[in-house]
Image (cartoon, rainbow over all chains, first blue to last red; front, side, top):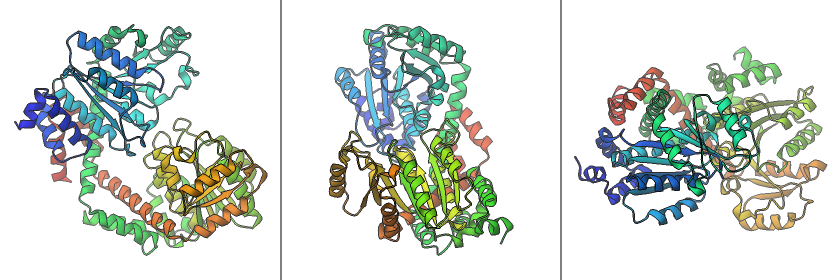
Length: 294
Length: 294
């Protein structure tokens, strides 16, 4: 076993942080490390927490961390913010959270912004969960912001997906973005002391038969253990297992695609673009020539 | 020349509509047709109209159509709505527009929703502009909604890009989404009779030196001809030519990528996903085996 793999599997914070940077920057060192670590994965509860802005996801995740630490469980957190490609930095709530748990070696927090490139984020997120799983964190939480189609692809995790909603969001369940609702294994009705909580519960029960529903008031610590238990219970279910296989299938496809394209020198694409723009040849002739060559 | 190519190049509305459906549905008939038609492209003014919701894009495009028809010019319109992946249908403004111009063979309108799949929309849009260009429309307008990163990739056209803004949007120019501002060849300050129009003009002039700025009140037909003239003038500029080459380069890369992946049977991806999910093997071992095979 390489030294870094050894250190990661002993939950050495600095080694985990370095490996996370390799993954995020698509460094060549990441792949052999993850290949080495892969047999040690599959033990953590991987928990995705997603939902529309304002649902209280960060507060909920913060309470999860406290509750798990009180049970002496270790927690790795990946915070993904695909909605702010231009900030290039950490989320505010995330920075506050880091301050809280900075000195606790049982908590590892990593935030990722998109830097204007959503495409590979689902894969990076998956590899981050592998890393933290292999590092021996008992629970790996992936918090994602946003409800667009691309965000759903990132929130659709190889694990249990928790969708956080609040009563009275101005929409009934029917009009909520379909994509994010369809990936839920557990619904959390947060701020459930607000008017409309029962109505939301009824609507969710009617629309989604096989999905667990838990009510929380995260800001006051209510319902936190129930939400974690619901996630743990559904963990080995058919739905979660099937989704995990689907996600691996999709990510493997992307990995193959990227590798195949790596074989073509970048200059070829640049030159071809100019040729077509100047109408010296048509795009389909170029494509057929490439397919013969590669 | 094939019969359909012949009919398209004579602007036969039904043939153009059928070819548009082939392009949108990725039918195998699309590619040989576009290859055949490609030498006839490059004549139309291809004009992208984009900007935040509420800027008045649809009204502006409607006025462009009227002004161009008054000059006896033909117009093809592609309306793209990447923000509503779940509607699956045409935009409301678009339907109204179709009613207006339904009987006019000099106007062809096609709307595309994303159907939950943004990835290929930039390519479909490009192929639609090729089709309408080859069909002999004097001006091809692509109207796109939305300001996210993916939408910018679609709005970034092989042609002139017009970004429509309104005064007093609550943000100054600095805080407007960077992505969409950076692809502008022409800024249109619409609703320029509103307070703040001069301030917006000053800020745009200071921030973007080489970009034309035109003021319009689209709802009253003011500034329409000036906006079209600005687009026509900038059409052959270095910036537009360079972007066109870049876009072709990116689209060719995608086309090659899709074709290379087509060689791998879908079942292989499904099986591999299950194997990894069940941890019978690691993803990197599978990847290396594929790279040897394909």
